[in-house]
Image 1: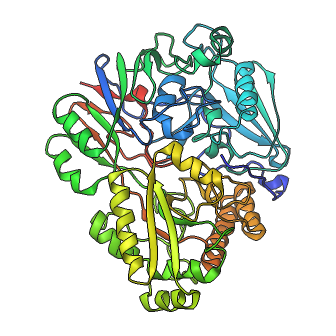
Image 2 (image 1 turned 60 degrees about the horizontal axis):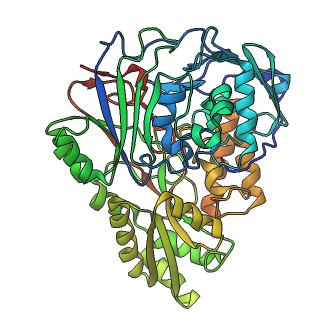
Image 3 (image 1 turned 90 degrees about the horizontal axis):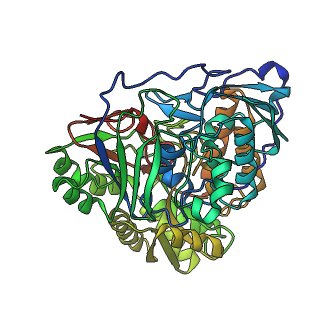
Length: 523
């Protein structure tokens, strides 16, 4: 997503070290995680309108500005080169494997043979290279942060990625990047970009029947899907829901059979009374993002005051029923390289907060976040808590597009966000929130940049953890961003609906788990 450069070099001896949870060379076949399902039936899935249920720019991988927020829709249409399944395993889908070469600066991805796009044209290396080049040529923040040099097709089923520096997280990063979704070049050229983004063509388990942007997407079974017998569903429909309460009402009325990413703890029991409720293993903690380039948070005392004035444990207990333990760094327990306790982390201390605010002569903060009822309650709780320390916070809630605009102004002060991802180098991860070159960062520190880049670049998982531990400690030392507790989400499904990621616990790649829609059944 955000622009990034890896700086670390590795010796040839560790070139074949595996990307975490992914076997070097991958696997030649994809195994079903849900066993043999019963074919037929339809499913209507609700997605939150302010996030995954909004796709105003369409569903073209290169130009969809919502990016990984729309992973459910994109996965269903395009499939994935690599995907995460039960047990937090990254497995090949439209790819069959990969290998590192040239000291870690070359990665070869092997594609599955005999695959066609749903328009009948070949899914081959030339098509993938076309997509990669087009994705990187577009300004979408959903493109990966590889230190890319070039991408070529040595043969029909090999994609060669040449890097300027090694990137040990390259395969993991694909899970939340637009390069994981491959569009039909023939359909794109024939239809033109404007028509294609409304009715895109991929090689995934479903094809588009109709698309009303940010409202309803109707899909049907792809008869050309490579994995014969799948998808199990004949029809899959995504609908936007205004909030968790309206989703509950819709499901109770029979208007939908699933809801992805329900985030209101107080509604869990209401959903459980009639539906299967599955807790998503969380990987992304909430954080209070501070813009250190402008007042008041260019002053470390103001940043420290926010740390000391924030009692994350109390907010978790009162608003979220202590769903997740308080964390001190950028990855939750279900993510890679989680660091439970960070040395020197400034914990809640109301007296210290008041003293710092007095030294500053007062502290006024403009505070914003993504619009949702849960976030609104969260913001009010923080506003009230900070007031006790003498910090005055004004609150503003935005849609996803409005939130992005705020970051683009560079004049924002503080935001309630999530920081981290299953892999810190992927998606809305560490670099997305903290790298100097990221448009969504409030920090511009060359030392932190170096640690983050080294954590991404190292091929060996042990080296990656060392750099990420150091980055967590440095963020605490500089008081760059208080971390709170992991985001708690649930997936809801009717009793007859089953499938990996929907009724089983696959860790969330960005914010929500990505169900494997080709494996979902509704019988």
